[in-house]
Amino acid sequence: MICTSAVLTIQPHLYSKLRYNTLRDFAPVTVASSSPFLLVVHPSLQPRTVKELIALAKARPGQLNYSSSGNGSVTHLAGVLFNTVAGVNTVYIPYKGSSPAISDLLAGHIQMRFSAMLPVLPFIRSGKLRPLAITSFKRSAQFPELPAVAETLPGYHADIWYGVVAPVNTPSAIISRLNAEIVRQLQSEHVKAKLEADGSDIVANSPGDFATLMRADYQRWAAVIKAAGVRTED
Image 1 (tube, rainbow, N blue to C red):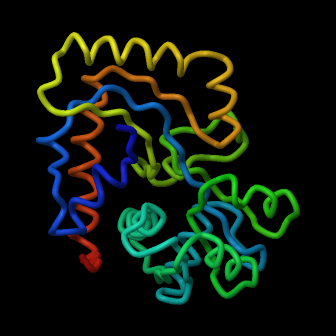
Image 2 (cartoon, helix red, strand yellow; image 1 turned 30 degrees about the horizontal axis):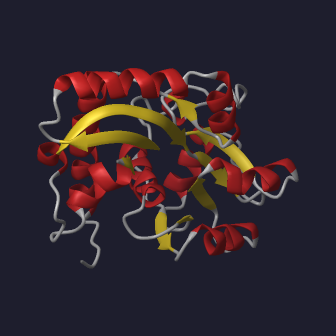
């Protein structure tokens, strides 16, 4: 099965009636790719760096809004994590999907957003939105001039990854063979070009590294969700 980090590491902390246990029911094979977000603001907002944005948010607590694609989404939690690490109070405004959220950002009704790359690139290029940073651990090869949020807030990162898992107790020989074949395809120039064009970074890690990442993100998002009191309806 191919599934996202949201399914494996976020939803278990939001829904009480899920019929799966992430850490018990799956055998990790590999993470295919990860996609960081861009922190973008409406151009009417003065800050041009994350440091300046934090200073403004501290000067105007509860007055800056950020949009997300829905309650409990990664774009929502990226903002929650930003507030926590930066010690600011920006206000979360939920939307039913990215299109209306981006529309209100373009109209200036919302001041900032953590967004997937592709939907906002045309507006960045036209000057209708200003990118401040990327949410990966380090700068992206696609946007080398754009700093990572972590350069201002050490340890901050938020992304969505796509992983391949098998049923638990799948023989290790099968897991190893699946990993080898999938990694080989991911590292082909054709696949790399397609994924990078979509704003994704190839990961292609080992089952052990995937298991470590899964556990770490599972615990990290659990802490963020609990601290912020994020709730959804089952």
